[in-house]
Image 1 (cartoon, rainbow, N blue to C red):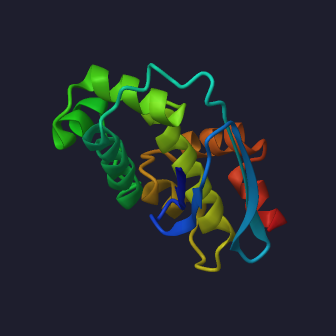
Image 2: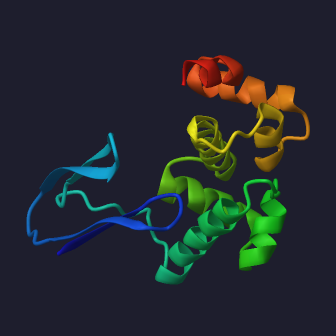
Amino acid sequence: MVDIYIKDKFGKLILSEKIQAKEDIYYEKTVIIAKNQTLKVTITLNTAFPPTDLAWTEKELQTFDKIIELISKDLSRNFSIEELADHVGMNRTKLQAGFKQVFNKTINSFTQELKMQSAKDLITGNKGYSLKEIASMLGYRHSNHFSVAFKKRFNVSPSVFKKID
């Protein structure tokens, strides 16, 4: 039995599946997450070679989820790895290594990705925020740093993106 749970950045469960499996698994599903937005989920599990290096306890996996929740709740705050480690009671080396192993990205790259997706959502939303306000909401002290990060992620500056939308 394999359980698949996928949550969006706000913690809302968007996919929950239980798959009976005694052999290798290939699972593919397209999930509608919002109007005109879909998520394609593909999972391949080879039972002949089970992972031996993922020796994380359920408590440690929950700790990594707490980190995601903490970061997601306050994108205006730039948490240091030390702060996050102290908050969840895990040493920073184990936290960094475990997060990278479980989510296949560093805490900082995860945070950056989350901020950029939120920036995109805020720009396309109808709230009327200025780019300077959005930069501040996402923890950037200087709007030009925000613009550089946005352009690096989406290959277009936020001001041009705003005009396109």
